[in-house]
Amino acid sequence: MTFKRTCVRPRLAMAVLLAATTLVSACDRLQRSQPKENADILRNIEGQLGQVSSRIDTSMTAQLSGAFRSAAAKALPAVVQIAVTQRTPERGDGFPLQGMQDDAGIGLAEGSGFLIADDGLILTNNHVIADAVDVRVRLVDGRDFAADVVGGDMDTDVAVIRLRASQPISNLPVAELGRSEDLRVGDWVLALGNPMSLDFTVTAGIVSAKGRSISPRSATSLESFIQTDAAVNPGNSGGPLVDLSGRVVGMNTAISSQTGFFTGASFAIPIDLARKVAADLVQFGEVHRPRLGVGIDDVNSADAAVYKLPAVTGVEVISLEEGQPAERAGMQLGDVIVTVAGSRVTSTSDLQSRVATLQPGTDVKIGFIRYGKPLETTVRLGAFESAARPQVATPEPARGGNTLGFVARPLPAELAAQVRLDENSPVVVNIDRFGPAAGVGLFPGDVIRRLNGQEIHSLSDLRRASVSLKTGDVVSLIVLRNAARDPSPTIVNYRIH
Image 1 (spheres, rainbow, N blue to C red):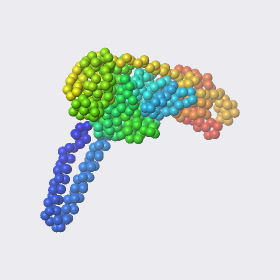
Image 2: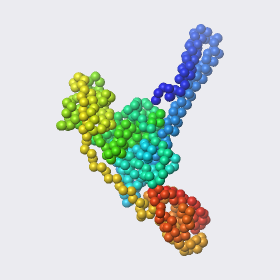
Image 3: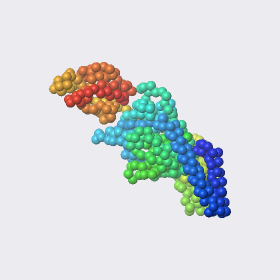
Image 4: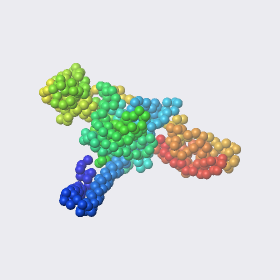
């Protein structure tokens, strides 16, 4: 955020401040010279000072509100809502999902994401789409699509999905990706997503810290979260964190909470890391993870004294993997890493995230201090062995194999006679809670009268009218509701998935 952007009229603000300074000086002179005689003048000056202060406060508030509005308007169109049918919903200690589960081990979960390419590529959290058997995506403009999982990475909790081209895909809004490295503590940010089923919500906060680690580290886990106080809740997972220019600087992922809801601290994956992981998933189907070959720890005050460091900062090498890049490049136990590729590193999470944005085989300059002496070496990064690629569950039709997502039976003869309908007229008796007809306004007891313009008088008619429907097609039903009491025709529209 530049001064020019937040202060749209800096010259006017400076002039107002100069005027205020002049008034204060005049007030001081009058008080010293003739305090009693100039009481009226003093009151007038104080009133002017109050007006000046009010104008400054109002102007700055309006400019900040304008920056929020502009950033939200730019970023929000690319945000998506993701609804997932899962075989075994994620139950880890990360960000809790907004969802439910049935006795058969099939659950529904909701999360967020954002479009990163105009061909329908979407970035989200791995825990949002874990064990998915069906993924649905809804855009801000109301369009909804089926989606396929391109790939996911558990170590970074990054995943990529792609809109399924079963219907025309055009005019997709794409998020602008910024640089998380440029963020500073205190910067304003906005968190966008779908918390607690509240569609397309925007909250504001500041960057509280960078490089946060919130769980025990492993050899391959990568945590260097951006901490913010922007309100984030279940359902925000995978949504973008944006700066006041509307550029994505992070992906909302976790909260620190004893209740499962926001209590003041939320965490986002830096977009620099998420971008690299996403690119690997798209290009290779897996993440190519670079390997430095060191065990590391944050420097404490005792380390700083032992290693003669100028400050208590840096990353201590506490072990070296035999034959791995760091050892081959001549690094030793007790070396304190302070720079990677010319950029300063201050903590283990900082070092891990910077190295993680590079590809295996890259030559990178590592700056370090060895017992008070600054040194530098070039390390050719190795690679961690790729974990077995998780098998993405094959999407399956709504349970029961029902394309329409509901079960119908012939209308009972006595009821058919009462409402003057054919006794073979199909009446809805059950709706698959995980099918396309769930939550669209169709209810058990509705009598089907028409499907996509075709008259329906029997179950055979219903089958013939629906046999050619496929994923992505729209269903338009005319149904008779409250047939036994006060029958009234109602229209219900939804899309097959």
